[in-house]
Image (tube, rainbow, N blue to C red):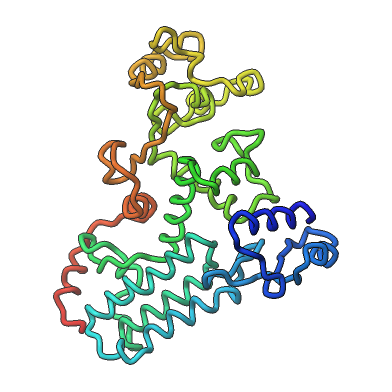
Length: 340
């Protein structure tokens, strides 16, 4: 704590911003011992988790339903306001789409919202759309795209999954203080794609690791200097790693830390001796190498990305994880009716 106090004093000296210790709180995880003594050494009071930051509850464990009451209350207030009372059917749809979905998206990118809270928010939205009466069309059908018979709303449990895939994408792209800290905290001795989920990992990082199978199907590796791509563990062969394609038949200790530069000579792929089939060797030879000497990078190859050359967007990410449907004839019949 002495080191932390020195850091804050140095920050104040350099920036001119001084810590107001009377208004500050320090928060500890449940595993931290001597909390009162540490808070006293820092010169601030000890706070209790969860605590709200920018309206979102922060906690070291999974957010509970009672921690997310403010999100449910927000949704209820928005649909009960006098401005919402006179909206048409289309207006109610747009309010749910823009306002409710917007605030939940902010939450999804901060914490893992409990399923019970999601069900409550969706129930509020559905009741508002049908003005508290009979739900003529199910919520699942409303949440389909227009071309599949819905009105283009998004089910929140799918949005939650897409937001998690987005965080995983940001993590492998790197280049931020958050990704550097997470990698240093959890991946000191392992590769992201080979890391096993540990109970000591944070809730956020566990969620990111669980998204790896989905993320693998929507990314491609741009091979440049080939010295930053793990030969065995990174999914640089389509959406799979060399270890997967070989059925895991490899002494991983012997191959640990090897990069793709081991199978390149004079700028040409030389996979002989590392693969079991001529077909796989030929697939490797067909991979284009950019001789720019820059580091290898990941590209987004999800729906609508143009074969891996398109930029990442949340719409593509959502389309990747959602359930796709064929439009049914009875859906057209329903939407021909006056449901206002």
